[in-house]
Length: 193
Image (cartoon, rainbow, N blue to C red; front, side):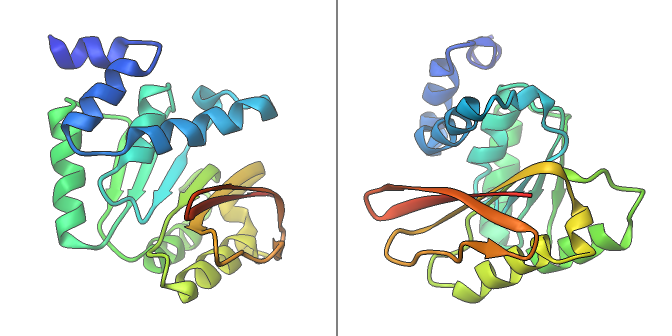
C-alpha cells in the first residue's frame, strides 16, 4: 500500500511526501536527525526517545521512520493530541511508541518516580511555545539536575527548539551546550550529558 511504501522509503522522501499530506513539517524533523549523524549517532540506537511538547508528532514520527526503537510523545493540548493520534493512525503506526497526555513537568515527575521501571532517555527533543520561557527553564533544569539527571542515559542528547532571538543558557546542571544552529527565526540548541 502507499503508506507502507512511503514508510519503507530509505531516502526519507516518501515519508516527507506523506507528512506534507498530513500537514506536518517533516523537513525540520529530518534536519534534527541529520544533525545527529555527524556526532556518529545512529538513530536506531536511541531507546527511548522523548518528543516533549510533541504537537502533531513530526519529530517522533520521523524518529520511528528512521528506526528508533521507542518514542515517548508528551503533549497535553487536546487539539494537538487529536492531530498526533490521527497522524499515527494515518501512517498505520501501531507500536513502538507511547503517548503521555499530560504536561511535560508531570510526565517527567512520573518518569522520575518510576526509576528502574523506565529506561533512561537517550534523546530528548523539546519545542515548547517559544514565548513560554518558563517551560524551557523548567524542563532543562529538570533534565540536568542531579539526581534527576538519571532520567537521561550516559551520553544522552537533548535538543531544544526555540526562537533564535532568545538564546538558551550554556548549561543546565549536568547538561552542557554543544552547539546552536540558527535558521531564520528558529534555533536548535544541543546539550549533552
